[in-house]
Length: 456
Image 1 (cartoon, rainbow, N blue to C red):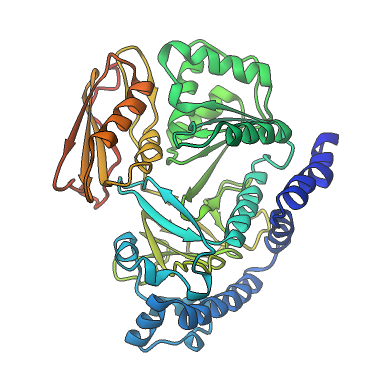
Image 2 (image 1 turned 180 degrees about the vertical axis):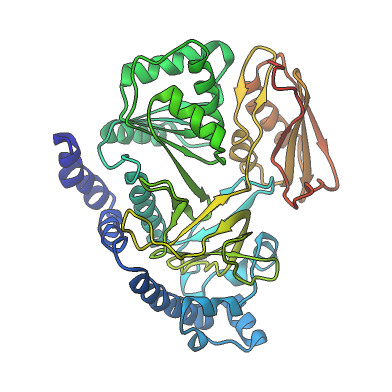
C-alpha cells in the first residue's frame, strides 16, 4: 500500500465521508471487510438474523408486505434459515409499479431517497431507498472493487458514462474535486469514435492508472484497436469490467491488450454491486452479509448448479424493502460444494447470462455502448419501455412504449442528447409503438444491432 493510499484511507477519506458528509460508509466498509472472512455457516447465521429483523419490519410497517404475508399465511417468525424465504413468491418491476406507495414503509415516508434506472430490459424503473442502504451499497462496492486492486487511493481511470441529467455546475465541480482527491480520472465512453481511440490510449499513458474500470463494450472496442497494431505504452495492474456481460473471448482480448488480469463485476442500479470476482475468478462472490442472492426457476424454487432467474433481497433498505426481487437477469447457481480458495465465506454464483447490450455505430466511426440508452431514457418520465435498433449504419430506430403523454419536449430532449453522441450523419427515427416483442429467451433487449461486424 502506497503512502498516499494510507493517507487517503486514514485521513482524507474519513475527513470527507465522515466529517464533511456525515456518512458512515467507512465504518460499514470495515464491517464488511471483517465479515467476508466469516465461515459460510457464520454468514448464514448473520443472514438469518438480518432477514428476521427485515421481515418483522415488513410485517409491521409496510402495507404491501403486511397484506401479502396475511394472504400467504406467512409471518416473520416462520423464517428460521435463509432458505425459508422461498415461501414468498418472487416480485418484479410491474408489481412494484402497481403498488408503489404501499411498498414504502410507513415509518419511512418522506425520509427516503428516490432513484431511477433505465432498466437492462428497456423499461425505466424508479424506487425508494434509505441513506443507510446507500452508504452500505457504497461500502460493498468498494470491498468488491478492492478484490481487483481498486482500493482507496489507487490511481484509477474510468471509461464510463457522462452525466446526462440536469445536475448543476456546482455538483459537477464537487464530483470533479472528489475524483481528484480519489485519484480517479473519468473519460466518457459515450464520446468514443473510431478516429479518437488514440485519445483514450493517451489518457491511459498520461494518467498511468493502476486500475482501469469501464463498460465491457467500450473497453473491448479500445482493446481491439490496441491489438490492431497500437500497443499501449503503459499497462495497469488490473482491469475491471462492469454494466455489461463479459465473454471468455472478450476477457482474453482485454487481457492481451491491457497486459493485466480482468475482473468482472455484476450489479444493477437497484442494489449497485451484487457480485464480484476475487483473485481466483471462480464466479462472483455474492454479498451474503448485505444481500440474499438466489437463483430460482420460474415458480421461485431455488436451483442448484443450474441457470435461473436472479432474485435479490436487500437486507438494509428498510424504506422500500425488496424481497425476492427478480431483476430480469439469468445466472447459473453454484452447487456450493467447494469453498473458494481465497478463503472468503461468501458464496459464489454465475456466470450471468443476461444483459448483453449491443454496441451501435455511426458512419463517422463513433462507437456507442448500449449502456448509453438506459442511462438516457431514465430521464424521460413518459417512457415505459424502449428499444433501439440499427439496421443501417446511418440510421437508428428508437421504439418507445409510452405511459401518459410523450410530448414534443420529450422528443426534442431525446433528439438533442442522442445527436450529441451520434453526430449529424446518423438519422434518428423515433416511433411510438404498442409493444416491444421479447427475445426467444424471454428477455427484452435494449439495443439490437443488425449490422455486419465489419460495417464500420
